[in-house]
Amino acid sequence: MSERVLVVDDEQGFCDLMATHLLRHGYEVESAFNGQEALEKLEAQEPFAVIVTDLTMPVMGGLELIREARKRFPQMEVIVLTANDSIEMAIAAMREYGAYDYLTKPLPTNSDLSMAVGRAAVYRRLRLERENLQTQLITQAKRLQALIANTGDAILAADGRGMLTVANPAATRLVGEVNLVGSDAMARLPKPLATLVANWQAVGDQQPAQVEVPWAGDTMKLVSLTPISGSGDQADGWVMVAHDITHLHRLDELKMRLLTEAAGKIQIPMIQALTDLAELSQVQELKAGRPAETVYRLVKLLSRIQTWMDDVLLQGRIEAGIGIQPVTLDIAVLVKEWMQTLPPERPLPLRLVAADRVPPVYADRDLLVRLFQHMYSQVAGNVKPGMGGELNLSVSHKAAQVWVEIAYEGPPARKKTSPLRPPKKAQEEEASLEMDLVKAIVHRMSGQVWVRGQEAFGNSIAICLPALTEEETSSP
Image 1 (cartoon, helix red, strand yellow):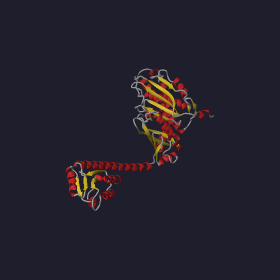
Image 2 (cartoon, rainbow, N blue to C red):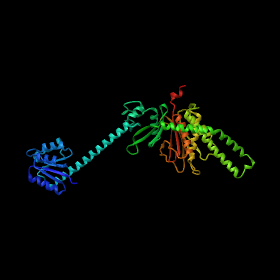
Image 3 (cartoon, rainbow, N blue to C red):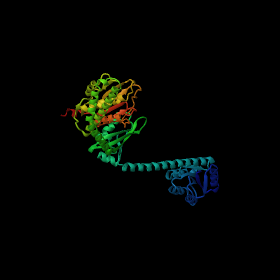
Image 4 (cartoon, one colour):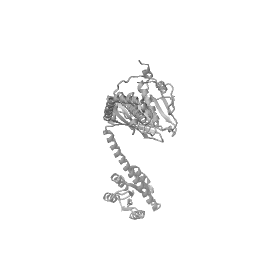
């Protein structure tokens, strides 16, 4: 669709010359011979893209026409025609009324007119597109603001300096403070959220993550952390969404309670069955042949079921807080003691790398030992037979947390830059139960679980527990 242009000049011959030239260049052109006639055509006809007007005209001069035209049709561009001795008036029209350009009379060439009109028309299209985009952005921003303000999820965002830039009403209620925007996120966030952000930043390659965070009053929050893209590979802040999943957590607790009750009921019969099978395997007639193989398989299967029941019962006790006896522990020393209990004929060697002066933690000793065993078996279980390599066990201290990570190193080599992330739901029930137990133990000790790699639970598992400060260590 061609642009519409209105040319205005009290010299009819010059006005017709301009109109003819612009028609040849594909514009729809209307003519007027004074300001009043031009204003009437502007109001009576379809919108014009550009108006080309002389300044000195009878009835209504050019400046008055421009003033009225810009007031009524702000999206139209104006080109001023002026004699050499009136250039100051043209410049004033551009400054005061927003005229796009001016041309001197007589025109050096007719192409100067078409080129000026073409530039003005392009400028107008770009300006309209920009205004349309701005309107769309404002509309979308208002919708987003309404959504953020009315959602029940707490939404917080921080910039690259760690200053809060967004905090919706639900976030204000969650944090329990007002006027959060503009303040230091780590100083204003509750300790569980501040710890989560610190851990997420400490593990590197800040990838999107979802972590279950125990909250006050026996509630549970599912917290999502997403980096805001910045320049290069650097994040320019983060967005946090905290969703209340207490009802789902209660369902999981109910499921675990039912499983615990079922495991408790069959525990004694299972022990009796294992005892009977053990006695049966001693019978001379079963020493060799098919019956002996069947008994062996039954013993192995029942032993796995017994281990499963023990884990279910232990998880039930952990979540109920039964029998938990936390003490001050040196993680590095405890890890070394646990490694000495492992059988020497392990399928993969286990190498320990412990940082110097790792602070102690406050945790249950037996649960930590059980935790190390499950982490070890989980990572080792993801390694296919014959792959080779080794397991590395590291103990370190960062972000006010003590970190313990068991990682597989070998073919195919794990990328050093592979980010740690919260564990996903596994498809294998047995692996899921083992990881659920790991998470239950760590959550009971106010820690977090992170994994690395592409497998169901990764080829590396890391836990972090709150480190005791010197004041906490020295206090009785």
